Length: 232
Image 1 (cartoon, helix red, strand yellow):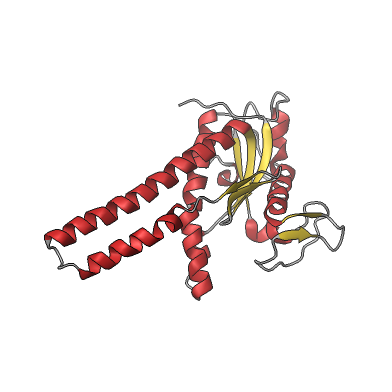
Image 2 (cartoon, rainbow, N blue to C red):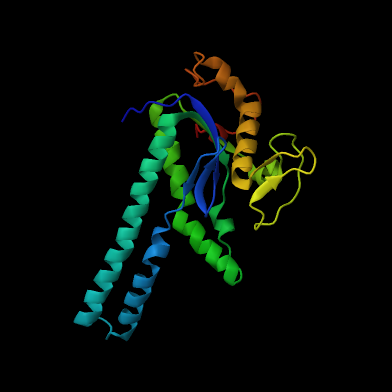
C-alpha cells in the first residue's frame, strides 16, 4: 500500500494518561480499553474458577472470556491503526524515544503493578511498530528514534537545555533556568524533535523544500545505527 507522508514535523512522547503527546501540543487521550473491560473480565474469571474444569459450563465461560479479551485486542488494534495512519499522513518527520517495554514493566509494588497494566493497555510497542511500517510505506516519511537514556527528554528543557530531575507526579515542565513552562509530555516531545533535527537534520536538506526528504542521505554522525533513522 502506498501512503503519502505529511509535510510537518513532530516529536512524540508516549504515555499512559495520554497515549501520545506531540511537540506541537497535540495530545491523544488513552481510551483504556482493557481497564474499561476489567470488571467484566474479572467476573468471567471468577465464574471460570467456580466451574468444573473441562465441563460444559467451564468451556462456555472460557469461550466468553476469550471473546472478551479478543474484543479488547481488536479495539486497541483498530485505534492504533487509525492513530498511526493519521500521524504519518500529517507529519513527514517524526521523532520518538527508544523504549524498552520489558524494563518499563519490571516488577515492583502495587503502584508499579498498576503502572505496568496501564503501559501494556496503551500498547506502546505495537504503536511504534505500526508507526514504523506506515512511515516506510510512504517512501519519504522519516521516523527517528532518540536515545532516551542519553538525551533524558523528560528532564531537559527544550528551550535552554537545562536538565533537572522530575517526579512522575510533576505534570508541568517549568525551567528554573530560563522560565519556560509547558506540559511535561509536550516539552519532552519538543526535546526529542530538537535533538533529532540537530543530529539527523542533514536529511531535511536533501528534500524539495517540503520538509520531507526525497532521497535518504547519510546522517551527520555515520556511526548512528540505521534503526535510529527508521531504516533498520
